Image 1: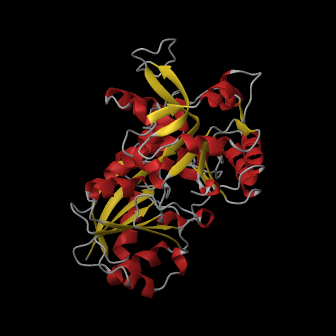
Image 2 (image 1 turned 180 degrees about the horizontal axis):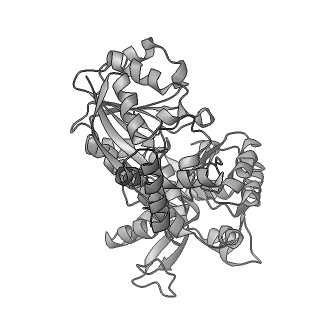
Image 3 (image 1 turned 30 degrees about the vertical axis):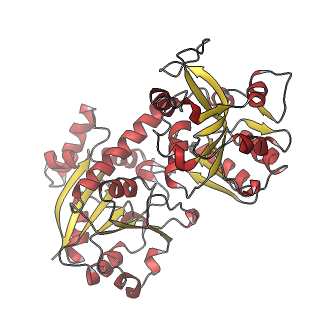
Amino acid sequence: MDINTIPVISVSYNSAELIEDLLSTFRAHYPNPVTIIDGSGEQHYRAIEAVCARYADVRFIHFDYNIHHGPGMAWAFQNLELQGPVLVLDSDVTILKRGFLESMLDELRPGMYGVGYVNHVNEGGFDVDYEAGAIRYLHPACMLVNIEVLRQWPMPTRHGAPMTEPMVAIHRAGQDDLIKGIAWIKEDFSREDVNHYLRHDWQGTVKRTGGYHLEEWERAAREAAYVRMVAQSLMPPAPLRVVEIGANDGALARGVKEAHPGCHYSAIEINPERKNLAKGACDVVLNHDIDALGDDFFRDYAGVSCWVLDQALERLRHPEQLLARIRKTIAADASIVAVIPNAQHWSIQARLCMGDFRYGDNGLMRSEHLRWFTRATIFELFQKAGFQVVQGAPVVHHPMENPVLADALKQLAGAVGADPELALEDAQAAAYVVKAVPV
């Protein structure tokens, strides 16, 4: 195969200088397509994005939380359109000369999981100084994998040794021959006075960012998984055709397709900065200005079982127009499932009280939000468009635990003639997930 077409994956976090070193040294020797999976904070990711933009054929995919090394790789393996050999590099690897990829490809045989730097660990993923009975661990700092084989095994996880789960599974299955160590990579990674092709700054990202920050990832992943679970539970029991507008990360599409392999799943990304959205589990991926779409577009989707509006309505100039156009063509037995942030959340009310109404890149105050909705106005929005909300659930990530603030909100509600207890209840939800049907 053409060595220059092998795709490259790297996960980054809060370190533009590492990505600069990786891309500049890699591009000095290879033109291969590169995808950077990024989970950096607001103050860092724009700098990393700018670095990526300076190099040809480099795609930057950003998550608004620290996705972490293992989950970042797993997302790429599951959602990018990859086939054949795939090269994975740590963000703190630098390339000294051409030839390393050719050497790795020579060692990778059909049917193998991958080749690279192999050491030995126990079932907890910790290094051990013995080999007999130990688990051979293919290190993701530099590995060349057959993606079709890799996808047959468990995905990398959130861990200081993210390949532990797939390596343990391979070991328990007695198939250690699926991975192979390459001597020169081990030497490049373990001896400072020997560098054949690569240099690796072990824990380079950790040194610059102060740790793995797993708690942040666990919280974000847990919250996102809960919202997906609720949304999927409100969808038809066996949908034949689904269209998702919002297309946040492809995880909902994967969950639906795994449960219903025959379902045709289309995703429409509405963020113009993500025109290269990966297809992943979706059958079709499009990028459109939803506000500019006419009735002709929606007529092509008259047979859709379920429209999923995943944090989409608040990002549109005319959300009522989208619902009205769907209403013109939607089947009588079809439905809409929508995830909508709650403007009545206690944190937003507290921000307003302090005058601290600042937009950001994540959370309820995302800068891309153009509209704001509460539980009451969500019901009104759907009703005016010819729908009835028949099911729903609040998404409560962080209940308000400040009794002084709770009393203040109830007093304010009472002062304006609202139900104090209902107002306090509505202030708990970060978002609502609702199911609406045509009437």
